[in-house]
Image 1 (cartoon, rainbow, N blue to C red):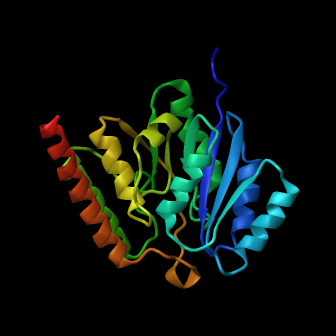
Image 2 (cartoon, one colour; image 1 turned 120 degrees about the vertical axis):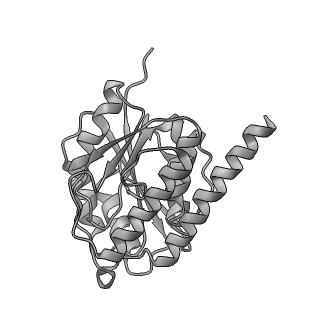
Length: 240
């Protein structure tokens, strides 16, 4: 008996009281080629996000809201959501409106058709987004290091839009708590031999004074993660 497809949309949230209700409404109403569940993980927000989410959950019993009592990071929130998801396919959606949720329909299509098991939404395949030069340089550098270490041909390793079969996602045994979850997911997918298909997405970046949380230190941590998993994976292969 075939299992019915279900898309679990994981939304890690930290201090997004001004945008999270809009994101949830868009996720509820966008056209998708399969049923969905929305899993919101509130990562210890202190700005009223909790109250907004509780109000949303009262209106929609199908919305799953998980509250963490303290802020532990995006990675921890994604891992918590992944553990609670019921779907056959996992998608990660940020709560800051930089990426339009309507794009999920095209990203999930290759997985449904069997053409791919992992799809990334690349912010750079459709041309350079309007990001500061330093941000662009950081993304280009991290992706280039990924391609060098893992012999891949990605254009956007740091993208939020990582969509894959749930079994693949859980098989990665993710460990990271903060923004280093992004390079960890990519490193482990590539080490396991999964092919990552990239499709273009439109991206509207927000500034730091509008709530952008990632910092230059996160780029340094990402480089360390890429190197650590590459050589840890090589060592594990020798032991086997």
